Image 1 (cartoon, rainbow, N blue to C red):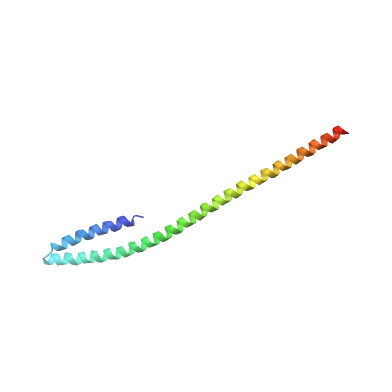
Image 2 (spheres, helix red, strand yellow):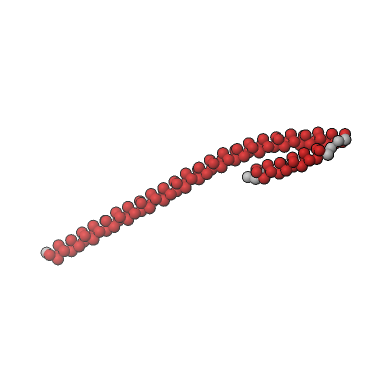
Length: 114
C-alpha cells in the first residue's frame, strides 16, 4: 500500500497551509482561515484512518507471510516424504527383483544338477 506516500503528501499540504496563514488578515482571510481549519481537521481524521489502515495492513501482511512460510514448509515436507516413499518403493522392488533372480538362478542350478 502507498500509505507512506499519502502521509507525506498530507504533510506537504499542511506545511503549505501554515505558510498561507501567515499572510491572511482581512475578513475574507478569516473565512479562508475557517476553511483551512476545516481542512486541518479533515487531515487529522485522515491521519487516524491511515494509521488504522497501516496497522491492519501490517497485521494481515504478517499473517500472510506466516501462512506462506508454513505452506512452503509443508510443501517441502510433502516433497521429502514422496521422495523417501519412492526410494523405499524402489528398494523394495529391487529387493524383490533380486530375490526373484536368485530364486530363478537357484532353480536353474537345481535343474542342471538333477
